Length: 258
Picture 1: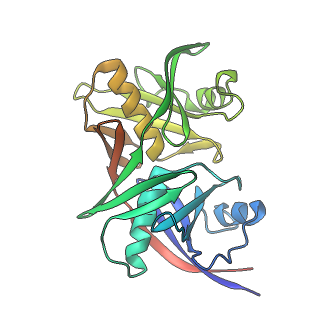
Picture 2: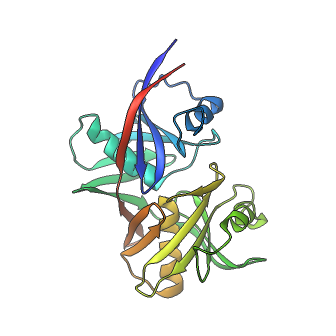
């Protein structure tokens, strides 16, 4: 039997199992990932994050969704990884982290963490669908955004799967975001995530996607406050790059047996 330590973290309600895998011994397998994320029979999480080394930067983050598939990125996961580094005893200095095929930067700001999320790509506005005009952008992960009058009353359980699997976004699919612009310039958002296949309490790349699209549609210059059920995130712009700031919290630690 093999003992492996883990720590549970959450960033605005988006929760993850984090494992220090700098020795590259974690047995990556979809069934194991699914088991760890199972909220009845496992630890319970939206995903599993591995901390690894990479010669191109300080670290590499690999993230696996609840369905066992590897994701291209995760903003809330990056903040949780940043907090994990401190809890491992590393100093609170800026770090460069490889995520998929990108390098992003982490920076500590008192109790919050700021993540440089790179440059958005493939922005497409006013795409026609049966649900109305949908907007698309890739912020490390593909996102579809539909602005609605009242996001709290919108049927995300129906619109989420519809947009996530829409032919416009084939073959990768897209995370589905419903958003409502508020009078104070903030935006309330709900996100249906690929790989989790249900609503999550927050989504970092989704917050960035909504802010980028809102900047194009409504002229918002940032920083933009994005409000989720799990908490608030702040998205700012510097040149062509996106910066996201928000919380990350250690929930508990333990060991799982293999």
